[in-house]
Amino acid sequence: MIILLDAMGGDNAPDATIKGAVKAIDQIEAEVILIGNEEIINKKIKEFYGKNDISEISTRLKIHHTTDTIEMEDIPTQAIKHKKDSSMVVGFNMLKEGKGDVFISAGNSGALLTGATLLVGRIKGVDRPALAGILPSYKSRLVLMDCGANTNCKPINLLQFAQMASIYLQTTLDIKNPRVGLLNIGTEETKGNELTKESYQLLKNKSKDVNVNFIGNIEGRDAFSGNVDIIVTDGFTGNIFLKAVEGLGKFVKRSLSESLKKNIISKIAALPSLPGINRFSKTVDYKEYGGALFLGVKKPVVKAHGSSDEKLFEFTIKQAEQFVKNKAVEKLTEEFSKQSEERQVEQEKEEKVL
Image (cartoon, rainbow, N blue to C red; front, side, top):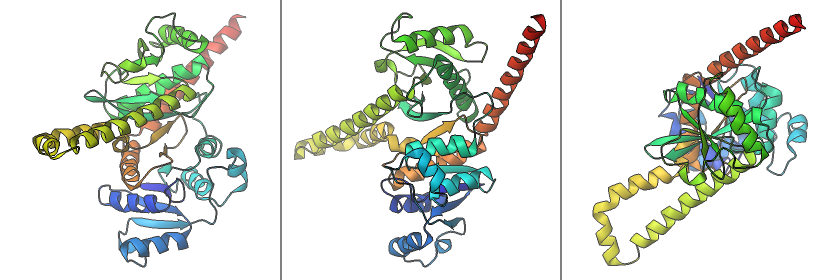
């Protein structure tokens, strides 16, 4: 297996991408190719590890040289079209050509989504690919779909988000019949704006046909109760929800740490509880859950946080390997192709009747 890593993408690149890859390499079986400016990467390798070549660290670490980088302020469509030798475009082309099994980038989100859709291509039958973010939940994990790819959605999109996320959880975490909730301002069927009300009716009426276990509306305060496995929403709402949760996690960790270090008495009193506190801290740390999977495209693509540090890249690389091993993309392709064929047969029957 080959993992393609955009070494130049993200706020902390290439330092964080290099260090994350080095940390992850002994924990995975795959080969990792860092895509970016070879001269810059080798200088960093010398600075961080005192090695002249990355292969001296591991024979499964390699560099693919590129001359350009897509910046955060670049216009996505123009960047993908004109920056042909950027680390992101080259990565997508390598993925498309079978020179890698999964592509990871923390770069420009718009460019990543545009490139994945235009260069790699959508799975037949998928109207809009979406980002599946992984979040902590009570004694479990929660998939947030969409967490930032599609700011404007139609009800059919949310139905497909539910379907894709369900297939992903079944194939990767072996969760049978995952529970799907629609993020809303109330649990009642009549609550919400036009999108949520229409989406509720579509999910209610069509979920069984596409093997989705729809349990109704979910309020934000109940998202982490452990009573729901997947939350579907449009990318605008989902991204706000995601970043609010990440911010709350940072606030809780910081406040707890400051409270325990307030004085000598609190420090001593906290000692017996440190193992439990550390476990809690790890649970609410979004860095433990890797990047967001871009479901709905023909090849595995993972969007890492723009502010990813070496720890988050380490987890994202391990997550990406598991994503490929579990063949989630193949399962999605198979299911949506089957549905497309069934719809085509139904249309042909209707045309004959008319």
